[in-house]
Amino acid sequence: MAVLAEANIQYEYSKTKLIAGRQIFESFITRSNDTKMIPNTFEGAVLEIKDIPKTRIRGAFFTAQKLRDHTEFHDVITFKDGNGDSWGNNDDSAIHKGLSYNNFKNAGADVNHQLIVVDVRNKSINGLKVDVTYASVPNVVASITGELNYKIALPSGYSLTPGVRYMHQMDDGGGVIGGATLKGTLAGQSGSALGYSNIDSLNSQLAMARLTLKKGPLKVQIAYSQVAGSGADIVAPWRGFPTGGYTRAMAQYNWYAGTKTTCAEVNYDFGKAGLVHGFSALARFAMQDFDEAKQAAGVQADSNILHMDLRETITPDLYAKIRIGLVTAAEIEKVSGNK
Image 1 (cartoon, rainbow, N blue to C red):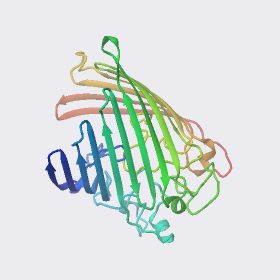
Image 2: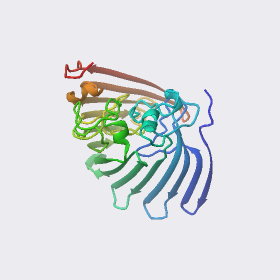
Image 3: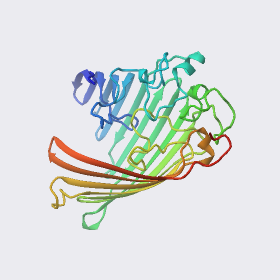
Image 4: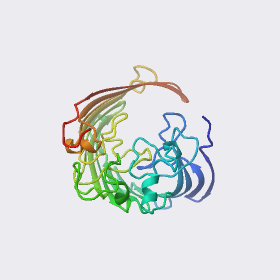
């Protein structure tokens, strides 16, 4: 595979920067996520302003996206193209399959969309980091997310950081077209069905909290997340996982409506501790409680996952990593409508 994934021009004046063209944009909702060595990139413009002390303001307007395993840029949210080919548009594993080319066309809606992201980060209060992100695909869906992390110094060199994140998702026409579930099984319907109270709306909420204890090479964290059971699944197919950094384990998608996740992790840097040069290890255990009433709509059964990363930094530019995921999952419930 070969693709010109990044090609842009940049203009800087004082503490203001403008980048136009193909680029990586790391934010709460978007990530390069380049584990396949061909990163997720976007086409458009980003303005970044740092003129206000301890504050960063960014605005992004993207007209196209190139997923990690794609060689061409495509629409930011439309699933499949006019030929039914998923490679021709956004086929991310977290895509909303109800927001497909045919469904947009049948609804008389545009199949070409833009992604708008505006975020603000402020560190004016010592120890407190405040993040606010607004994201929108006009005429489809929008969201606003707030996050607070406050670092508390403890005796003996320890620090404790409580953090909270709340995401409010707002329907902007996409619910009627694609339905409330990411699987697309409720597209074009209305009322309540398969565990969803309003199947033609994308309105939803996601809340999470964590406690992170650190000292030198050691990091220990416990976290919890919950998606509103009465709302829709969370729409975020741009590799910025909504529960990332809190309760998401490797290859897991725990932002379906009604999902509750409890997660604990330990991360230890043996190199920093002076024990094994360049070596670090992470172990994360997540207990995922999905809503059984929604399994007929495609939501998975309850599961527990143990995720481990073993990493050796050979040089500053070269590392090797082994990733392990061990999953135990319950059987699908025999609820009405299951196939």
